[in-house]
Length: 182
Picture (cartoon, rainbow, N blue to C red):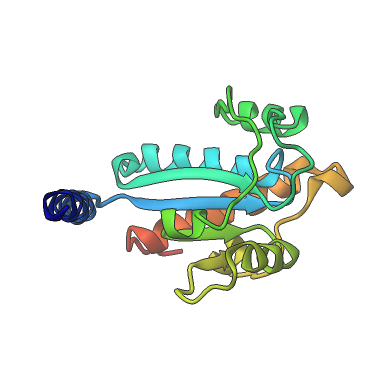
């Protein structure tokens, strides 16, 4: 019996050491963009941020994904007008399907970025709070904090594009400590 306990303890220590080793060398900032359905705003932010990071030479510094607070669109592709708006700017989101955010995402990501105040409330509910202050609003990284325009209700994907682009530029600048002079 003592031998079995010893083996279990050794496995536990090995797992802990592997985790510490992984954390030591995992220098990527993990970002999860979140909106209500994960078919418009959050996937736009995901793919805009990936594009900006790549163009700035920082792609290897980030792991970027997106999710929904609701279950309504799980498994659905990016909404066609959002997909077209990204394509207008040379950004491909092929293969992305909606998924719901989970409580475990709080531990998996360094930053959870909501598109509006309703998303933030739901993200806090799903995560059971935000003790590490990782839940933020995208537009807080701009000169005009507030909600990202929701094209689901307005049909104005251009306004959403502008908000998402400005927010992602501000976020990338903050995370890479680059400052722009205007």
